[in-house]
Amino acid sequence: MELRINITKLTHIILFGALFLLYSCGFSFLQSYQLQALMIATAVLIFMFFSCKEMTIKKKQVLLLIFALYVVMGMFVWGVEKERISLIIYITALLIGVLYVLNNVQVSKTEAFFKVIQYVAIFEAVTIFLSVAIPGLMPQKLGFLYRPLVIDTMNKELGRGIYSGFIGEKAAAAYLLNLGLAYTLSRVNIGRKLDKRNLLITAALFIAILFTGKRVLLLTAALMFLASLLAGQPIKKKIKAVAIILLGVIGLIVFVKFVPAANITFERFMMTDSYETMNGREDMWASAIEIFHNNPILGCGYGSYQKISGSLYNGHNSYLQLLAEIGIVGCAMLAIISIGAIIRAMINLHSKKSAENYLALNLLIITFLYAYTGNVFHTPTQLITFFMAISIIYSYKKSLD
Image (spheres, helix red, strand yellow):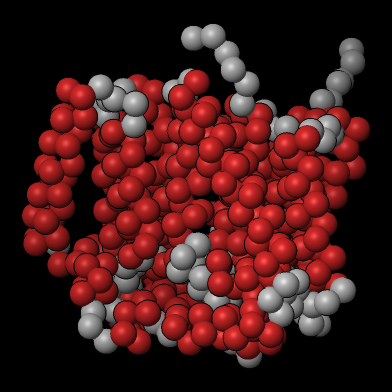
C-alpha cells in the first residue's frame, strides 16, 4: 500500500492556511506582528521551494515581476532603515502575492478560499450583532482572548458606537465583511437572481458594515451591490434591479430609524468638523506629498513613510503613500498593471459572465476604492487580495458556454 502526497496540493493547503489565519485573526495569539511575519514567511518559502519548478513567466507577467523587484530593491538601496519585522512583513507579503500570480494558482482554488472567507465574514457579522445586543461582550466577557491594546481599542470604539466583533478593529472587520460580500455577490451574478440565502447573507454583511462606522467600505459594498444588480442584465431586469435598490434604501432608512446603533456611519458622513471627518488624514496626506516632492522619481523606499514622517500609522491613502515611497517610476508600473487588470477583467466578463470573473472585478473594486482612505498596499492581507484578483484575471481562459 502506497501513500502518495501531492506536493503542489500540500503547498497550497499551507499557503491558504497561513492566509486564512491572517485574514481572520482577531484573537491575541494571532495579532503579534512577529507571528504574522513568521506565518507568511513560512508560507512563501514552502510555496517557492516546492512550486518553483512549475512556475511559468508569461509576457503579461513580466512587468509585474519587474515591479516587485524594483520595490524590494528600493527597500534596501535607497530606502531609509526600517525595523526588521516590518521588512519581513512587507517583503513576504509582496512575494506571496507575486508568486501567487506566477504559479498560476487554479481559479477554483481561489474561489474555494474566498468561500471559506465568506463563512468567516458571516461569523464576524454575527459577533457584531451580538456585541450590539450584549454591551461589552467582546472586551469584558471575552476580554481574556485579546491583548490589552486591542481591549483599549475596542472600548474606545464602543464608546463612539462602533462595533468590530471578534476581529477587534473596525477597519479590519469592515474589510473582511466586504470580502465576504464580494464572494456572495459573485454567486448572485451567475444565478441572475438574489435568492433567499444570498439575500440574507448580503443583508447581514451589509448591515454589519454599518455598525463598523467605516464610510468608504460602506460605499464600496454599495457599489459592488449596484454593479451586481446591473451588470449584464437586459433593460427589463435593470428596471427591476433599480426597484430592488430603492426598496433596499427605504428598508435601510427604516432599519436605522429603529436601530440607532446602526446610524454611526451616517453620522460620520454628516460631520462638519474637517479634522473629525478626516480623522487626521489631511496631515498624513500632507506628509506624503512633502516626502514625494523630496524624492519624486524613485521615492524614498517602500514602507519608509512612517520612519520619515514620524507617524505611528501608514498614510491612510495608498496612492499618496506609494507616490512618496516608490516614486513616479514605481507608480507608473503599478498603474499600467492595474489599468491592464481592469481592462482584462472587463474583457473576461464580456467573454463569459462567470462567478470567478465577477469575483475578480469585485476584489478590484474593493482595492481601488478603499485605497483612497485606507492602507491597501501596505496591509499584507489587502495587498495579497489585489494579487489574488490579478491571478484570477491572468489565469482566465476562454471556454465555450
